[in-house]
Image 1 (spheres, rainbow, N blue to C red):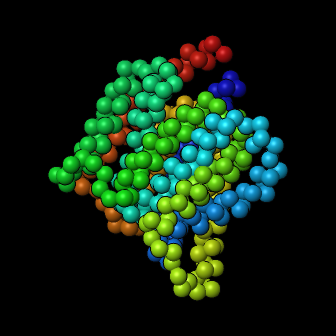
Image 2 (cartoon, one colour):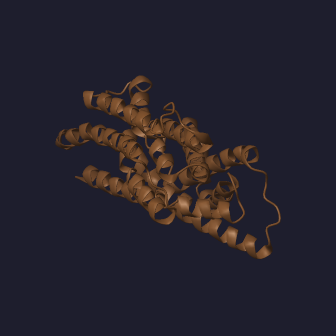
Image 3 (tube, rainbow, N blue to C red):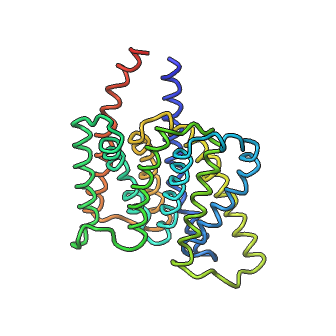
Length: 302
C-alpha cells in the first residue's frame, strides 16, 4: 500500500512538473528578447539556480562524498540535457522542440533493453516504431528529408537522448536527496550552457543598470521555480518510476507548451506536423500500457 502511495505521489509530481515546463519557454524567450540572446539566458537562469541551491547543498555536502560517481554524472548529464532543451526554444518553434525532446520513451526503451538488459514487451517495440514514424512524418512535413532543421531542433533531439541516458543512470545508481540532486543538475546545466554560449551568440553588451536588474530578477525567479523547486521534486520522483514512464508523464508539457505557444506566440503546426506529433504521443501511450498492466501484479507481490 505504501509503495502504491509513493508511486501515485511521484506520478502526480511528474505530471505537474511537465505542465510547468510547458510554460518554461516564456521566460527563456523573454530573456533572449530583452538582452540575453542564444544560450546566455540559460546561463543566467541555471547560474541563479546554482546560487539559490548552494546554501542547501552545503548543508548536505557529506552526501556528495559518499554518493555513487555514476549517479552524480547521470544527474549532471540530465542537467546538460535540460540546458540543450532550454537553448532550443530560442532557435526553434516551441511545439516542435517539445515533441522532438519527447521522443525520450523511444530512447529510454532502447537503452533499457540493450544497455541495461531490461525486458522489452511487444507493445514497447511497437511504441518505438510508432515514435520513429511520428518523427519522420513531423520532420518531413515540408517535403524535406525527415531530419531536424536548424540548431534548435538538433538540440532538442540530442537533449531527449541525453535525458534518456541520464534517467537510466539515475534510476540504477542514484541515492542522492532531491535538493542535492537539483544542485548537481543545475551545475551540469550551467557548465553545458557556458560551453555552448560563445559559439552561438556573442556576449551581449550595453545592458543598462535598470535593464540588468530586470534580467537578473527574471533569471532568479525562473531558476528558483523551474530549476530549483520543480527539478528537486522531479529528482525525487524520477528514481521512483521507470525512465520510460517518466518520459511519458512529462508529456503534459506537450499540451501546455503547444497550447501556450499558439496563444502567446501565434505558432501553429500544419496538418502533417500535427499527425507526426500525434504519433509521437501515441508512442507514449503504447509505452506506458505494459507498466499499468504490471502494477496489479507487483502490488500483489508486495
